[in-house]
Image (cartoon, rainbow, N blue to C red):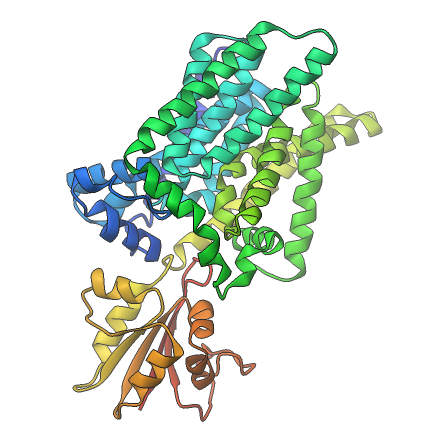
Length: 498
């Protein structure tokens, strides 16, 4: 393993400093639904009760860190998000180390810079959830796995086992990534066995790493193991009745991941997706001799995650693939360099190939910086803005109803004391009472499907833009104001019946 020069250390430190600034800026924005739910149902519990019951919403290792920072610094959003931010910076560092070992320091610098500017990396680093921690431990798992196969050492595989346990204790889907590595490892054993080149170290040391990781994971989850098994066995039941059926479609997942990244929909999403696939393919080709297992592990993890989630009938959220972003960016950078070098060889000018790579890198960095600024346009979900607006306009005697899953947030976090509406029957009963009513709707796409009568009264599907300030209708409900959010379906809509 090559030594890191002082110049390379300086550039890595500069990239991490830039990443820190971009993540500290806006870190104290209002919490959104999942963050509030995490605090109210988990972080507010006494330490001894945090491993009382299993819940998909509890990212245990992250939440332990978040509770510690919350107790040190208070219930401010920045304090609750601090572990996620630090884990996010760790992802950039770990990816830099991985890229340097695989492809050299130039590729490592470019990859780390693009991650520092990445819209998704910034978004999740400012999100008090366990996804950046999961990405960090998975990246370290990839680093130790590949390093351990290249240079077998007990310490490397012990570290691999620890990262495996840390990832799975952060979120159960962390097991999918290490399962992909296990499949590749078994395939490598069979391939070498068939050629009579099997080395005992290839079997014993990785097996030790997987066993250490598995045992540690069981021990960590042991207090809530019965609850965990019961929850996982029933996960398909909640997905079966979910009105948002698109969430179980992997094509929607891929399109949504690209749409949120580029901030646009339509044909550009498909074009971007094809470009990413092409560059990832070229990047994989460029590693076929130096590190042939990296790309197969990355691709297999994505396919395995989709297959397993579909098998159990679970929603396929884009965030389940957040751990792959660093790997995909690395493959994209390698693919870009491979393409530029190919043009250099075809034209007989290596300088042209290098120049094209530099020009392409500058362009992609500029585009990434431009897209990153969307993180700061709105909060993830402006529940705070909707609450302040409604309390400012509410007239004496005017009722306020909270519709959808942000109702508990308004009542537990903001102490609004507003009745919550989830069904058509509840909506009709509430509006049967005379008098003016304000309705605060969170997650509008979901809420208007959950409560179709409300959607009809507000003109949700009447072909017009609900949030157009010039919209004029004779519908029973008038849209007073819409509050945008960077979260998918994270808007807030305030309606009134006079």
